[in-house]
Length: 251
Image (cartoon, rainbow, N blue to C red; front, side):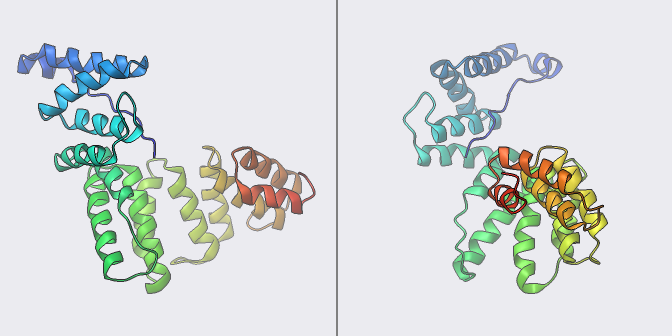
């Protein structure tokens, strides 16, 4: 699970107002050192800032322990810093902790507890407008909807993320229209959403749209376009696309 190290450089006006120019300089030093691959310096500077309570630095320090960059890989230490950062409202840390929640496949009391923990963390990040968190909430509700048949909640969250350009959420909306889950089945609408995601390089959406071109569902049947989309998806490692290419005789 690799995440982007987050810059903790503060705006100059805010820094000057607080009389803490050195604080911003330490942030810049850590960021530059990390980008240059000098993990020892980045670790030292971020550790200092993290101990002073900077949530972004705490998240970055957690990332370095999780990845084993400049330190011996230590998941417990990573988790400690993620939790400190998340407690201060850092959306990246909240999403990371939610993704690390161990959710059993069988729905029981343990699964319910894990789902609730993940949901609460994702909601904290989603309330800050984070599209990733919004999409993940949608996915959790989509899984639940397979039992409850209530697809309104996942659609709501997918739309929030999709409106911010989240390709995975756009693909899921396409899937819901394709299947008719919570909406009237509409192949043209499905193709529209798949295309939006495919245009951003989402390989699953490319494959889904390719299959629609193969069958002429919501689009004019076009085997050449199907092959083109599936080849692009296959290049991204999409196994379904590779299988479709075999079926089309265009490996």
